[in-house]
Length: 197
Image (tube, rainbow, N blue to C red; front, side):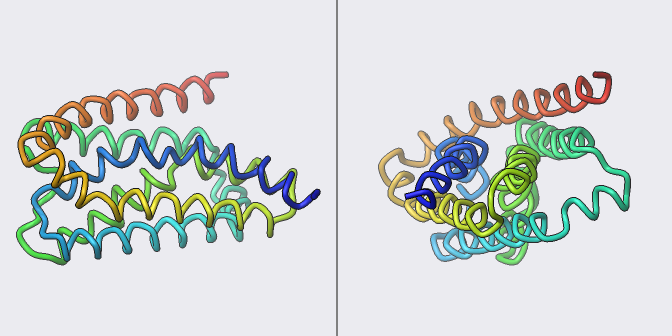
């Protein structure tokens, strides 16, 4: 019972930080011009990237922070700048990056999907706080469960595209990129305020 209670206490903060449903429109925007097979590979690549970054951070995150003298606020600013640049590029050109070939389109699964969207400053900060309070094994199980949920959302993206149609996805993508730009600015602001505080 204690295991289940602690699993719940670690699962919920990570679920909120990861925001699986909120990431779905961004995933659709990034993969709207790719074929279904490439989109599936992007789903797997983004999940594996997020898993690697998250587990790597749990293992050596504190040591890296101390070694490089990096603060959590620095992570927020850096992640926010990356997302802001990508959002602005998409709003101006209609593309976040060139995706003429499959390898380029699949790299979207690494950046910005795997990180900093699925596993970004919010998730990394949450992991850092949780491993100070609970057994690492429980935190890792909660993290993996959240990644499975995110994978399922991304995996069902094809059905959502079929339901909305190309025009619907394009319209949602534009709105989503505006929201992504706002999220990026919020991340930068949080980082700066933390530095000043």
